[in-house]
Length: 332
Image (tube, rainbow, N blue to C red; front, side, top):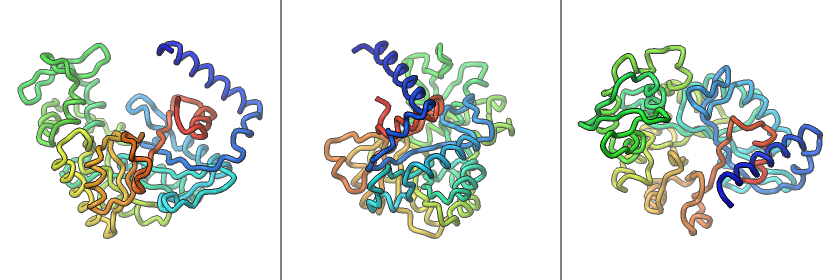
């Protein structure tokens, strides 16, 4: 079946799901649904803007979703999920957040406390480097502001038809190069942008990039509803870099968070879902007993007691369709 036909079938399925729920016929989908899902959120803002980050939702949307899930799902902590504390008559769900945005503390935690729902937050160690923004966010926000070619480490990058920066010679995307490179290259990339393209100069955008400070991490971790975990040190794709670099990333992150929070960090969420079996084993040796991917990449992963998959939510879909996807466990 070709891609166009698959998209048509998917859109029809979404319309059908909306019809079922809107007419009170979606409840049968919830009956006797044992099993589990780990869901992943990213940013929460006030307005639900998709202009800067398509994974953001508003605080109001998040409140409505948590209220709905509290009624229809069995919501548990990440520890309880790993311990197998699943309900027999409904879906068991654990909520997680990635990237360490300050908006998680500002907007997400009050909702979680309102409904007494636990969640795990996976953050990087970027603040320890003196930075207050993750490089992928900087690149996404700064690129539209850039008015001229960008020169990084001797290579010139220009915008393609989609507005993404690509190398003039190789046509390789700057974002892909950064994922495969060390932090020295990333620093060169960040420093190459002119001041007028620095998104941090726009204070009204702060919710879309600012990382939690050490004090804010401690405030978040103080909640009995919160589990804290690592999202690597620099938000590097651990499966795409040499294993020695990946080891340094994971260890630096663990040390930073344990120093800041004065507690053991045993949970790790792979940035971009990127990992290898060697990364998994190295992380296990460090004490990361809970390792979260997006999809399993190797046959043996399903039997690995440390590994679990997660399902990312898609804010462009109606909540009815997101529920249907959660129940199914995939988008396809």
